[in-house]
Amino acid sequence: MSFLTKHKVLITAGPTHEPIDPVRFIGNRSSGKMAYAIAEVFAEAGAVVVLVSGPVQLQANHPNIKVVPVETAAQMYDACHQYYSSCQIAVLAAAVADYTVANPADKKIKKQGDNLTLELVQTKDILMSLGQVKSNEQVLIGFALETNDAIANAKKKLLAKNLDFIVLNTLQDEGAGFRHDTNKISIINKYNKITNFELKDKRLVAQDILNYLEEYLREMKVV
Image 1 (tube, helix red, strand yellow):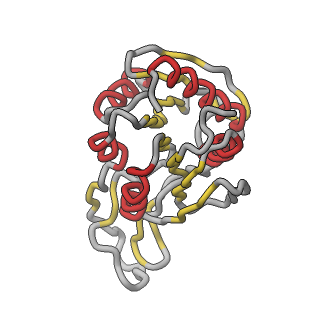
Image 2 (tube, helix red, strand yellow):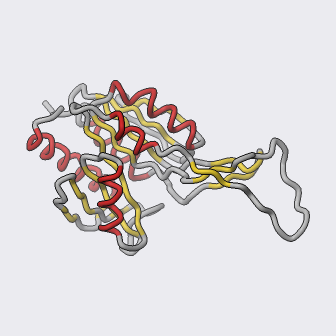
Image 3 (cartoon, helix red, strand yellow):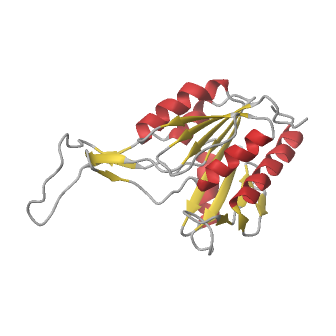
């Protein structure tokens, strides 16, 4: 029997789309492939998965996965807080927008003049907010996609958001990051131990994360 059998796991996936008007939005290049692979691997290991998913062109096929579709960062925040208290493990792999449009137009903005200025305001930090309410019986895992100073930035995020460990990938590694079918990760835990993995298919990366989690739980004697 898997260590995850009947455990409830919250996973976030994909981008968020922050509306400018009814036809335009601010978004990013996340495909959701990594998070969906994690959801499938965890479900196959016996977990009951709640997958809070931004707009992606993917489907979850395992019966143990409940998909909660959202579009905006605010909707993802609300969904995560709805389900988090009943979950033993959370893996926040979504690429959530840091900023949203202050006053989206209710009608399509017509082109006029040479410039368009948008006022942006910060979105609520989902990962930090969950870290603030995390119990000793819960494990919180974050993701960091970096372009420079990757290890230092990931360690700061790990500490600031009260994570058990963080999964780091960087766009400096060919074949890693958004839209690829492969990824290359490092995992940093809250004791500053760094474990590096080779470039591989995202499903195999998801299995590495599962295996790391199992070992982490065994050492920490939690969940």
